[in-house]
Length: 155
Image 1: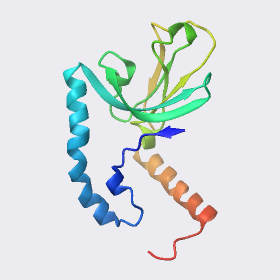
Image 2: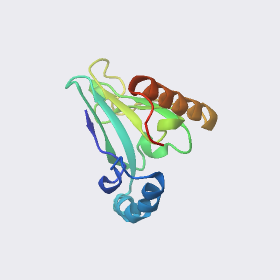
Image 3: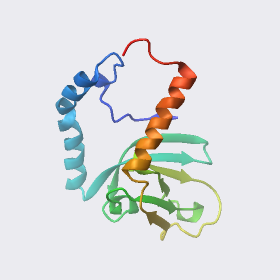
């Protein structure tokens, strides 16, 4: 699986404190701002997209430029979205937007099958989980990590 992290390499060091991480974030704002400006100049928006290619059996997550009329560009707030595209309609991917926790990270699935939705994809869109459910999910993930890997010796 290929993942383009949204965390700048300089801040990916696990030894950084939360304060150091937060203080370093503004130093990298210009990078993402430049990508957004370049996309806008071409009539596009940037989105963080997860892709599952069932044929090639590959997965990836990366920032992509999407035309303003693409379903990705229409997503706002905490909405979730699934866009189905099949082999006949491979110019438009199948997109799955997950919960509030991953609201900016759609999951794209491409695979064989009916060819019905290539130029006019089937789109399912609805509200996300919300802050409370997301917080509970994150807390559950933290508990699971502690169970599997043990609690840190230093806090």
